[in-house]
Amino acid sequence: MNKRMETGEGSPTSAIEEDEMAVMDVNRRLLWGGVTLLGVGGVLCAAGATLSIAAVVGATRRWVGQLEEPPSQVARRRWAQARAATSAGIDAWHQDSRPAATSHERARRRTESVTV
Image 1 (tube, helix red, strand yellow):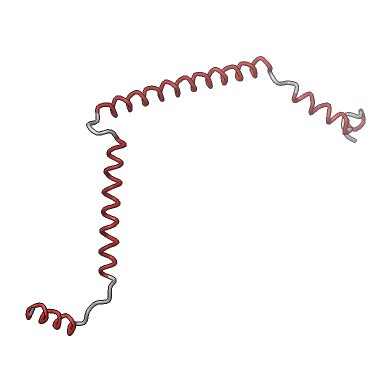
Image 2 (cartoon, rainbow, N blue to C red):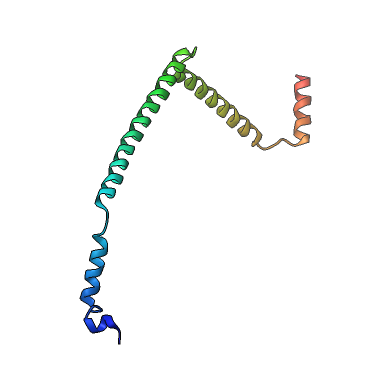
């Protein structure tokens, strides 16, 4: 037989005790050091992100200040151009979709306009 079985070391309760002991062998000092470094790294990351965002916002404000025309006016003008182009396209589409006159009707119209 197995020596463990004879001494009672193979019982289910002894297996549970061995598993609990394995979990307790964590080096707490090393664990706290890792947690501390992660915390410090997170704070440094947040500070770096804040500084970067502040730099980008400042540069964007300076750039907008140097423009001849504010972006809101540019957007309004472009929107008006887009509406005009859309309207022209719709009008052209409506004219193109009207039933085409036959060649006989076109010839009749030409002669009528010449005689008038």
